[in-house]
Image (cartoon, rainbow, N blue to C red; front, side):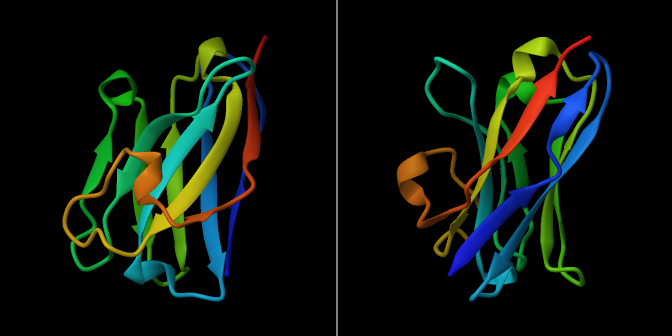
Length: 126
């Protein structure tokens, strides 16, 4: 049972990136997926999440609304985090995590997530 976040890289301020979260050993549609990030020297924080595919309700924390969007492609078995208008303060290691219990409303609490990926690095710099 594994999750893999990918798609990170170096981007200029104002640019965009799309991160992907894929699973092996389980069906991602049956899980809510959360995106979290940890900047150097800071604690990990929630970014966005999406409930199980039965409802696909997506949420982003207030500070990310309008710039970050999470969505699921069930056919490709991927959950994406689309990040637009990136800022240097968005530089961080981004993780995806899976939660088997959230069919309607996903959570921003780390403790609600059972499976974690290893993260993908995002650097926003000119």
